[in-house]
Image (cartoon, rainbow, N blue to C red):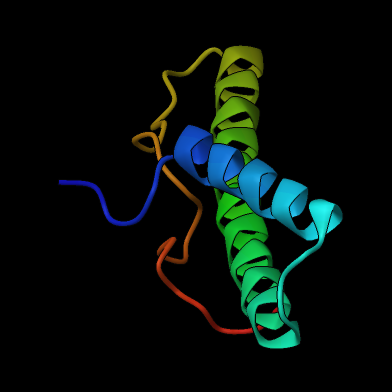
Length: 87
C-alpha cells in the first residue's frame, strides 16, 4: 500500500483547498488550517514531480550512454509524501 496520496489525489485536494480559500466565508482559524494543508499538499506534489524528473533524467542518461538504466520505481523522490517538515 502506498504512503500518502498519489500526485493526482494531492493535486485535486490542493485545487479544492485553493477554491475554498478563494471563495472565502471561512473563519480565520479554518483559513489558517486550509492554508497549512495546502502547503503540505504542494510539498507532496513537488516531491512527486521531483521523483518523476529524476526518473526521466536517469532514462535520458542511460539512453545516451547505451547502458540500461536503473530507473527508480514510481513515486516521490527521497522524502516520504507524509513528511511534513518545512522546506
